[in-house]
Image 1 (cartoon, helix red, strand yellow):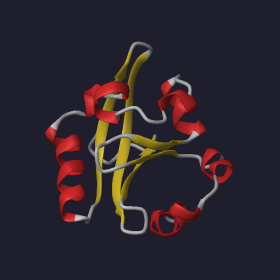
Image 2 (cartoon, one colour; image 1 turned 30 degrees about the horizontal axis):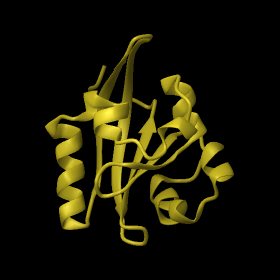
Image 3 (cartoon, one colour; image 1 turned 180 degrees about the vertical axis):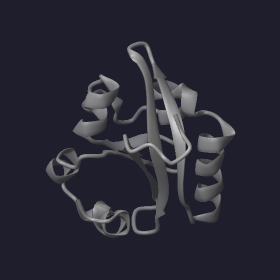
Image 4 (cartoon, helix red, strand yellow; image 1 turned 180 degrees about the horizontal axis):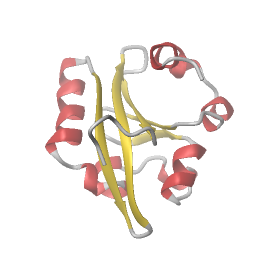
Length: 127
């Protein structure tokens, strides 16, 4: 797989099919947290339908567990500053069990949006 920096450079130009074939979860959010794109990889891991998430607010309707300073706070600061590139460990708590992940949030100047990259590669020290 290509480097994270290379992926970030081209993600705005990727088709839905290309996004769906990435081995990582990719979610694109507008400045209010509404979902613009939600790839099949993340939908499968979260056990939800990707298309049904479009237009919903990620922080309130889809993943309310992310409405914490470490995640939602970083998102809000990044949107305000129009600059964000942060990676951190996070635990999604699903009915089917906890999912330990590495999250990368990055702001795209090109689309004035924030991409949420979800990787099952856990950060050192997390578990």
